[in-house]
Image 1: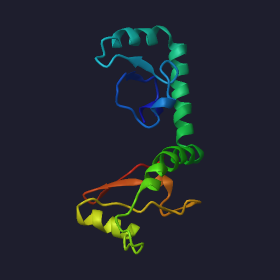
Image 2: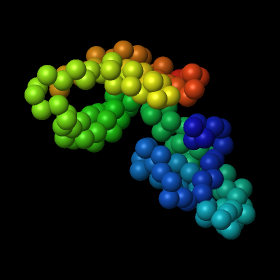
Image 3: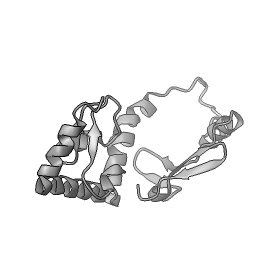
Image 4: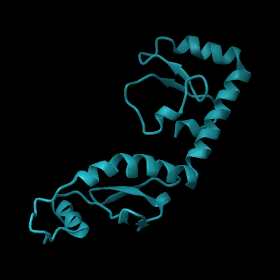
Length: 154
């Protein structure tokens, strides 16, 4: 993450949002600039003339990233974004198999996607009470055409 790099981050305002974006604040974790960069020189000059304030912003960003990379933070993010938000989607799923004898399994779904060129990894198995993780949360990756892109230090 750019927030973890040394120095203060000048971040352009955008409608594109990362999952953690609501937790970072302008003038606390980064110096905001317009998306067309029209005020970049002004903001740069402010940072140059206010080195102590810029240093505090940089330190706050580093603290945020260190916290964000912790196991506790990732566990809370998993609960918030996957369990709570996606849980309602999973709960609402209705199989088209109405006789109660479905042969659809996680493995058959993974096989179906693989046969169609999408390589999925089974990350966890959940029963409504708990999840059993098949992979370390810090080793999660995305597979694309057989290449695994790992996001170590999530």
